[in-house]
Amino acid sequence: MEGRLPYDDFPVVFLPPYESPPAWVPPHERVYHPDYNNELTQFLPRTVVLKKPPGAQLGFNIRGGKASQLGIFISKVIPDSDAHRAGLQEGDQVLSVNDVDFQDIEHSKAVEILKTAREITMRVRYFPYSKCLLAPNLVT
Image 1: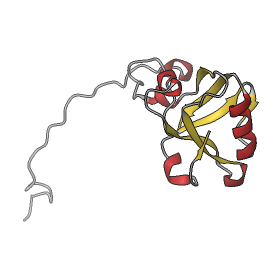
Image 2: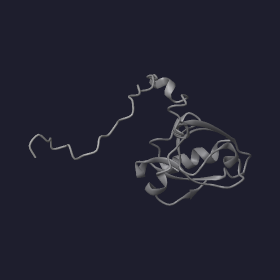
Image 3: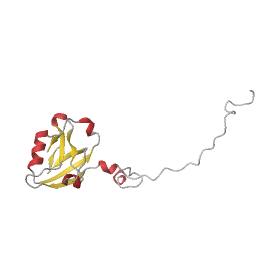
């Protein structure tokens, strides 16, 4: 054992050459940069515009509201409805409707606004975990 080092029995490992990290990309450019595009854009807020003829259905259900402390979410979208064609999807959080903040609104008030408006400009963002968090649907 004399003259031997404790690690002499282990094989020699050759590491690959060092590669410099990629160039730094400013945060405001990362959303559209290919090195940072991990399909995260689906979670960014977007605008959906719906026009509702008198007596027509909106084509989606909502749930949540101030009582749940979670906001208003799209719980169901009727296939082939105007809402579906406009891009609404189950799990979208409704941030605002016609410039009315929906992040801290009573459910009944949200339903009233949605049912009485003829043209609806909604600001929404996809939040897939809402399905686990909220109470039963209310049809609008």
